[in-house]
Image (cartoon, rainbow, N blue to C red; front, side, top):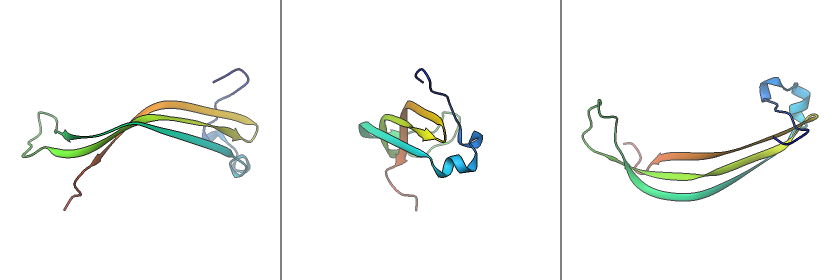
Length: 85
């Protein structure tokens, strides 16, 4: 957070502040690949499951009521490549 900004979580905001919220989120996917997911060693496993892995960054900024908000972080999402039957 920069100078003059304060953190505000949605549960801390007054309902009327959320009605006038102006929030923007930017997502950048930096890497996508297919790999195989293995259960932890203590669990039985009969096959490895192919999965898609998405990696990237997000940045959220905006105004809620009189509060400037902002957050940035790295993310990794794993999605099964074959739907369950």
